[in-house]
Length: 358
Image 1 (tube, helix red, strand yellow):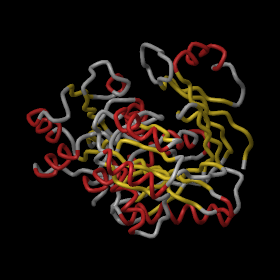
Image 2 (cartoon, helix red, strand yellow):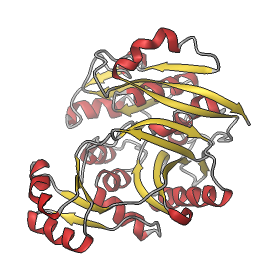
Image 3 (cartoon, helix red, strand yellow):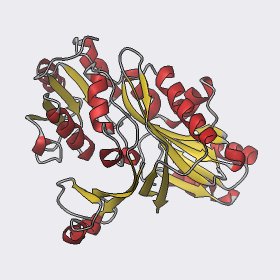
């Protein structure tokens, strides 16, 4: 793809905080941003040149969006694949591609893909009926983790089964959603890699981060993580396999479990800029948001070398009410997403704390 010139229009499907930070990065590079989503008062709409408010399945609105955009991307993985396919059918340039989105939206397809390109996963079973679940538990044993195949994030849409007789209640708790049963991963810690690929096949990876969750929601990421060079190289190789196997263009996040002996197994793939990559905004010259814009615009990818070790902390719900104190912390930078209603567990912002220069 020929690099888009300055002043070109970047279309972003999705209007949340990731879209907001993508829009800000694109604007800094001289692009105009057209954000598309259902909320006129969204975090992304308030910082973008144009905001189109419509359902993701509104074909007439998608036609207008395509006509207003030189390239289209997305900021979260629950955009309908059919919407991307429709845009492509109308001649729009879309990155990442619809196949990558479709695979990563479905946990069974995602893990099957991972194994097909030589990436290890926990044992897993496709669950469509209670009988499927009971048979899978008989094979896998307990504890096992039952998840919806689609959607679900920050600990939602999943339930632990610790005794075989809990199968029915667990199955019914998902309200008929197609599901996946996963074996328990006895991991020592979770790490993630943020990586990017351009239209020309160029790949760049950021240093590996170590993540800590509280009640299923990411609390902190420390990057670069204190891990061996061997483990770092293995994690980066996995990210490269994902990018190339999906023919992916843009930035994605790959979450991995570290087992005994530094064995790595895939947790999940996020086909977008990712919460565990927010540290790059202050740790690297080219952060993940600029990198994604560079990739989808056909520009050369930026430098991913870490200049600082950074601890990123999510600000959830009422945490943001301490903004005045947080804004005075030395060696730190506060990011606020512009959302109303700081309800419990809602991501309202984050703070990057510089730990040391590298």
